Length: 401
Image (tube, rainbow, N blue to C red; front, side, top):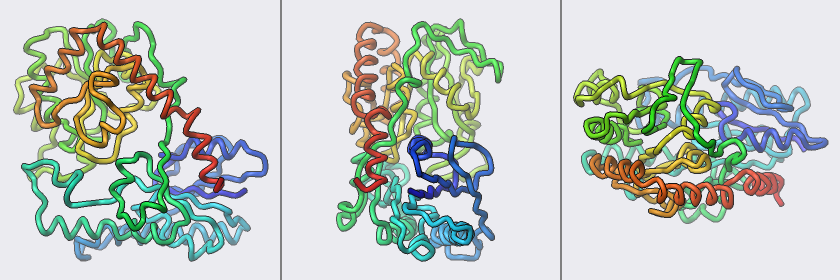
């Protein structure tokens, strides 16, 4: 079998399936991406390059569609080169929404096209209207409707689609749901596992918290309202005044990845640190960490806080559960598909910093109860979301079994 993976980044959702397929006899795996860094054993990485950026004069409703078309065009040219070299895939598996799969059926009409569908955008009932302080405008409604254009094109052209959670799958129009299956990416529970007595010491960046007895952790791509960053810092500011030994580690970049940017020149990190009276010697910002160091953060954590709008579920939530970390998470559908309050985690009102602080204290003050929840959470991931369970399902799905 010949298979072509497509994603702007590398290897994102596909490292385990790509590596597993590359090990199989008579299977050739190619990965098309814009990334020039990174390797997977047995996988040939091929780079595609966009010819230009979007034109700022284009109507802003169309920026996402234009970017997708520019990406799709670059993938189309890359595929033509592969075709000229004699590589014609049996299967093409691409990430939908950003353009890579758009023209696959034009260059490889006989190839089976699979699409990974993370999200279908809606103005109401999920992430966009979640925060009452920022209700969607008429302009937002029209712009968000147009964001679905490349996704709808992929839904029409693909042979099958896949979504990682049932709640994310539920966001898709009923006319297309039967074409999209649900299989989670899965997690390596032999790597993401508890380590008794673990302490956080990252020599690479000079972060030594090995003497800290109360360590609260938070991870996200960016420090932004969509992932509850302001509420988290407000909760930590309150706890710092009550618990002199408490430290917090915030993993991620000082930027907005999802949702609205600020109207001023400040980042949310700058705004919160200027507004809150915090002991900045007890809150640590190591930036983006490689996965090996991120696992050490989870293993050393006294409690991990995961806050989110009803949106795409982050890998971090399930990795910290697999690592035996006590999870404090927002009570929203994307979380509650996985987490049961007081059984596999502690649920909390996304908007309430006081409630977040109280649940953190509950986790710190009741270690015996928390150990039961930690054990339950890890077992849940092992039973339902470990690679040992999901990877065979994913491989069979790719092969059409």
